[in-house]
Length: 146
Image (cartoon, rainbow, N blue to C red):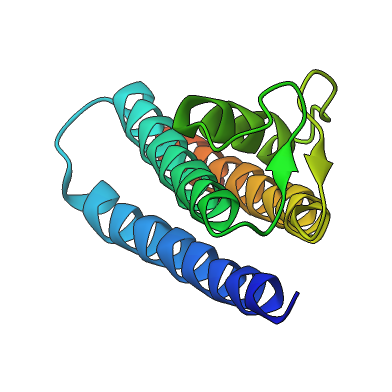
């Protein structure tokens, strides 16, 4: 169980740092882009999507490695399967909830934390996208001198 706790703590740190770096770099890049505001919003959305895909992959590969190490498995597969691990990670991270694959053993902790971590990071992404959109709209409006 200690290895799973260490993996969970590491994943929280890695995914948070990854998310911060992606949003930070996008934020620095946006003002210099000489494209329409709509295109800038697409840059934000693609960057956020890429960040979440990488975070899901981190969880999926960790889940796969922990299964290979004998620290649990996913039902329906019974053995370590990278495709199933990535699929399970995607549905857990996005808080869709698991159904056809269920973690057994210490992996349950990883699944619970991944759902919470995904919820927080997706919320962060939505907040950033809203702020970026608001900034683009503000730049588009002529200033009021009231």
